[in-house]
Amino acid sequence: MIYKANIRPAWIVLLLMLLCLLAFTMIKTSDTSSPVNIKIQTEQETTSRVDHTKFKNAAENEKCFKCHGQSKYTYENPESQKTVTKRMFSELVMDRDVFYVSNHREFKCTDCHSEDYESFPHAGNLRMEAIATCIDCHGGDEKYAKFEFEKIDTAFLASVHSEKHNEDFTCWMCHDAHTYKINARSNENLKETITYDNMICLNCHGDFKNYQLLTDKVKPNILKKHEWLPNQASHFTNVRCIECHAKNEDTLVVAHHVVSKKQAVRKCESCHSQNSILYASLYKYQVSEKIQKEGIIVGLLTGESTSIGPDKSNTLNIISLAIFGLTILVIIIHAVLRIKK
Image (cartoon, rainbow, N blue to C red; front, side):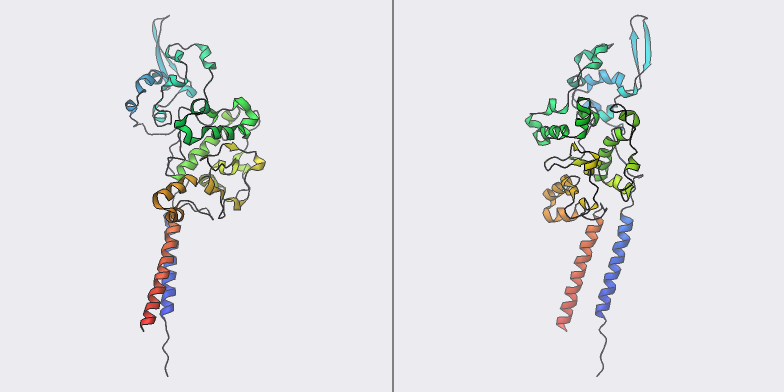
């Protein structure tokens, strides 16, 4: 009796090997972005195509922007009867385009600043006016209840920023009222959210002049302090500072309880595990939004978050599901053909 070799299983293995090779090639070519190539719109960068006129207080605000909206301003000196042009202090220049994409774009300047600024020259004592904090305007207001400003204020008061600097450290140290945008709740590009939020921290911790406004200590070397961190550059561009340096709150999208450096997260498994803290912070809004739109199964499987590894692309998830599905299909077809014979 002559036996013929059954080579069909070999063809199945070969097919699976080709699929794995194709998947590996796609993964390598799918995510070509690098920190250098990422286009980020920060508080200092924006397009110059914002239509200012559509905002209800734009005409009123232009009285301020005609001086504070550029690097120099002109006025008539009543004493000398001459037109004088002077340079505006850089920290007093407010970009119109940045303001009109910020959270407070509908406000009048005098909603926050004294109405005495409407007259020129400004009285010198106006520089000493107390600036309202977030809770002064938004606290107890049902319209803004969903943002939970009271909980944010409580978390902030417990942070090292508040404990070490007391009243010197206000909301505006991190969130400039003229430029700040709610990024985590509205930005679909997670890379931009991470970079935007990290730039808020680096505005002090990476800028010696700003750092010295609060302390006489020597500015810490961020790179040296994080030498222990594997793949340092990848962590800096894919994870927000607050993920490791702040206490996560279940109901708050962005944590404000910044902890001491001794309490900062240093264990890899805190993020690279099935119970990753990133699910409760960085990915929280994106995952919940995707679940609402596409259902819990699709939302969790195709979301931007990953439980293990640094990958932030959906490509790996989709390819894995495709390979799994094709494998099952091949097995079923093979079984059907064997049964028929």
